[in-house]
Structure formats: C-alpha cells, structure tokens
Length: 287
Length: 313
Image (cartoon, rainbow over all chains, first blue to last red):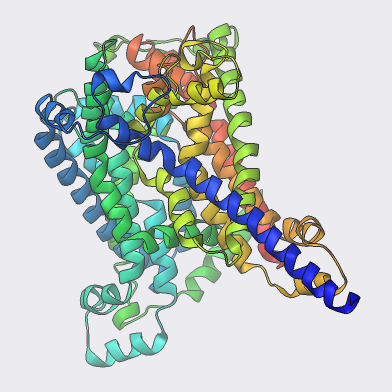
C-alpha cells in the first residue's frame, strides 16, 4: 500500500509545484503587460469615465479620443521626420559597421588591435558628457535644428562594429581563397558575398539602431527647436507638456497609442532578432 | 628610459616583420580607408567633444560669444565641491542606482530561472516581459504618470483596495524617486531577463545533474551550483545597469522634471539643468567630467573582470 502511495505523493507534489510556478509566471505577465493594456483602456474612455474610482477595467469604445489627438498636433510631420532620421541612421550604421568590421576581421595591419580597443572604449563615454560640447560644435557648423544633427553623430556604432567584426572573423579562409581565384575585388567580396551571409547580424544591428533612434529624446530635444525637423517622441513630449495641468488623459493616451504602434509592430515582426540582439550583448562582452 | 625606448623599437620592428603585404582579398593597403567613415564620426562627435568638455570645464564659458569666455582654471571644480546642489544630485543618483540595480538583478534572475523551465506560456511571458524595453521611454513614462496619479491613478486604487493609505507619488518629495524607480524597473527588466536566460543556457547542466544525483533540492542546486556559476553574468548585468541608471534622463524629464524640490535631480539631470536652463556651461561641464570619470572607472573594472574570467574558463 505504501508502495503505491509514495509515487502518488510525488505526483501530487509535482502538480503543486507546477501550480505555484504557473501562478508566478501569470503574475509576472500581468505586471509587465498591464500598463500597456491600461493605456488602451484609458484611450477609449470619456473624460468622465477616466476619473471614476474604482476605475473601469474594460475598454469603452470612445474612439473620438483618437481623432481629437490626431488633429491636435502635426503627427504626420513627426512620423515622416522619425522614419527619415531613423532610416538614414540605420543605413549609415550598417554601412560604417560593415566596412570597419571587414577591416578589423579580415585584414591585418599595423595598429589594428590598438584601433579596435579605441573603438570599444567609445562605450565609456556617456551621452550626458557629450551634450554640451556637441551642442556647441553643432552650433558652430550651423547644424542645430536640422536632420543632420540627429543622424550623423549616430552614424557609427560600437555595438555594430563589434558584432560585424565577430562575423568577419568567422568568414572561412576557403571562401576568401575562392574569391581570390575568381579575381574578386574587396569591394565585391564585402557587398556581394559577405553581406548576404551576414543578414541575421545585420538585421539585429538594424532593428536595434532603428529602435534607439525612434526612442531618442534628450538629443533631439536639445539640438532641435521646430516641429518641422523634430521626431515623434519630442512631439509627444511637447503634446504632453503643451496640454499642461488640464491634461485630458484620454486624448493623451490615444496619442501614446498611435505613436508607439509602429515600434510594437516592428517588435512583433522581428521578435527573434530582438532577443538574439539582447543575448549577444552579453555574449560579446564575455569574449 | 633607454631600455624602454630600445624595447619599443624592437617591438615595432617585430610588428613590422610580422605583418607582411597581403594580396587579393586580404590586401591591407587600404585598411585605414575602410575605417575612415566610422573614425570620422567618432572623432568629430565623440572624441573631440570629450576633450572639449574638459576644456570648457576650465572656463567661465560665455554662451553668446564664446570668444569672451574667461579661463578660470579649476575654479568650477572648487565650486562643485562646495556646492550642496552637486552633492545632493550625486546622492540622488546613488539612491537611484541602489533602488534599481540590486532589485533588477534579483528579480531578473528569478524570472529567468522560472522561464528556463518548460512551462506553458513560456514564450508569451518572455515576450511580455521584454516588450516594455522596446517601447519608447517618453510614451511609457506618460502611462506611468497616469498610473501614479494620486487621485485617479490605478496604483493608489490598488493601495486603497488593500486598505493602505494613498501616496502622493510624483507630487511628493519623499515618494517621487520611488515612482521613477518603479517605472525604470518595469521598463528595463526584460533586457536583463534575456541576458540572464542567455547566461543560464550557456551553463553546463552536468554539475546540476550531479548535485541532483547527490540528493540536493532544487533550492540547494540554485544556491550552491547555478548562482555561483552565473556570477560572470550577474557581474556584467550589475555594471551595465549601474551605468544605465547613472545616465538615465528621459523618465526624469517627463515624470518629475527633477522635482519636487530637487528630490529627483540626479547628476545627469543637473548637467542638463545647469547647461541648458541656467547656461552655466563651465559648471555643467565640470559635472559631466566627474560623470565621465565614474562611468569610465566602472567600464574599466568590467573589462578587467571579464578578461580575468576568460583566462580561467
């Protein structure tokens, strides 16, 4: 009899443990996802519903908030600016990282390790430190309040150079020999043979650069002053600040929703690469 | 001196010998040309400005006409050391680091360990935890301002439901920093969870299996096997979150503007305030130099530790 009971006890303990874990995991999911759900609910309330205590937990369908928010600021302009800035920054990072990654990974030249350490040491310099001197430099070259001030300073990335150097280190000698026999130029070798192979790495670098560019606030806030060149997050902060004390939270929530939607769509499309990118930062530093 | 010089010459000669001319794909003649685009960006917008900020910190900088700026030596640094505002901002930065870093490490490890199990919904939860990290700080911090609203906010409703007193959150000097810390934990946790999951995946399961055979409980296996083996990852996460927290700006700007009464004015925020609201460029640059030194020190410690680790592995 005891012989039958023991395994049953083990099974029961397993089920109990599983239940505890599932509860924990669901609690975690709720904590992290609820604020996003909450903004959807808020964006669909009327101003009278939003201040109810206790709050309504189910979306109410007051879509007019979206119309009101959309008409209250030049969002099309902000979106266009953001796509232009983030797109060009991403392109620039991919090109500069590929070229530097090729040089560091495939070529051997004097000062290679010194230069590579120098690139890595750029990571030590925080944006806060660069704010004042870069502002003065951009002012001197008349780049304040332009797209260029938001693109060129971010046109090279330590993370990108690092990952592409790692990639180019793994390009097999056989491939290089084959290209040599073909009489391929370096330029063709990089762009037509290596770049297609490096697509996963390039995608990771690309989406992170795009996301960081979209997220940028402090830099464009300081370096630009007119909505004609400002990106979406600055526009949103301006909309938030402009509404002042009498902020209509429902309308604001609608603006938060539609300004964030493109980034969420991007995330859902490239989820695997996003997570691979986060993992590779630690793997990279581990050497 | 002479020995150093001769050793240097010897080394250079060796390097010159060891790097022959290559042909074809490995032709190294134009190596520097490939590096030029990124080098130009870093030189103009990172390296020169870093040196420049040091120079500005030695001046009484005149924003309107820089030519009229006055060289004042180390006076800005003297002012800094005697400025209660500066020390207070360092204290706030420290409190922010203490409020975000250990909590992030422990919660992220716990979530990562939980997600390593083959539970249902595992992928969905991973996506959910990571999603705040990819959403912009301005947008998400606005959601939190609303959730932390003392009158109508969701969090005070929860406190009320639990029969706890309402908190003034961002409007109170005592609670504002905690509010920003809660937002920051929520926003950045997913990134660290992923890093810990990568760390856990890379651990060999052999030791854990051996401990299991020896009759160790799962708690014991975690404390005596997994946690020690995970220490390189833990150290890495600790350093990068510390650096991230020291640099944090946007959530302070949207949520509290450094207030109320300077209760959330961190050193980073003070650089912005002094430089762009009060136009004390020299003083602000001196703070920036101090920040740079702190962050550089942390980065170097991180590198040294990871180098040592590689040797032992």
